[in-house]
Image (cartoon, rainbow, N blue to C red; front, side, top):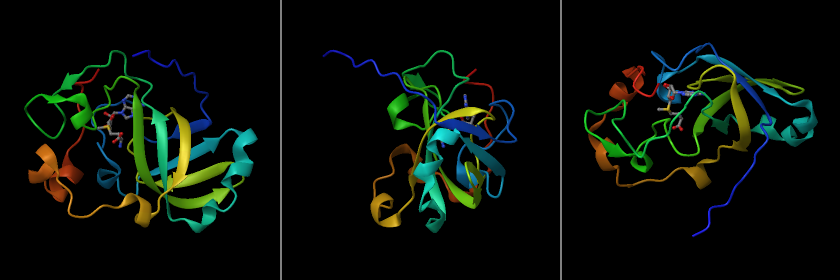
Length: 163
Ligand SMILES: C[S@@+](CC[C@H](N)C(=O)[O-])C[C@H]1O[C@@H](n2cnc3c(N)ncnc32)[C@H](O)[C@@H]1O
């Protein structure tokens, strides 16, 4: 089947304290209270109307420091190879990251956020409100991640395997 070529413009930049992909949290739950800032391009400010009513937002961003994607990876949480689509590894074909972060404050086009697990200057592609009734699922099958405890996920840090 024909592939669609899609050209996206970033809508802003995510500022975080994580300067390189190594030795940093691997998910927002492992980055609790780590402060970041979204600098939304001013032309999109109007789109933030009503966002202040939400405690959390979902960020979709470009994992811009990934060079070569891979279809099989050994994820941070395991020692055995997995298909990329069965993981949240950053080395994915379209290099898209997704993180649910907490809103701390909003002023004009600047959003201060908490729980950031992306590298500084990651290009932001979209913002969506987190809404439990859309986004939460219960009684799910958890695949190879089933045995991973919350504490383990929070404590694992990245390394240089996806350089
Ligand atoms: C396992 S991924 C998960 C990201 C996101 N929460 C997700 O599930 O799509 C997080 C790791 O990707 C790497 N990373 C984060 N931002 C990146 C970026 N902009 N470019 C390349 N790698 C990045 C870091 O090693 C970080 O620990």
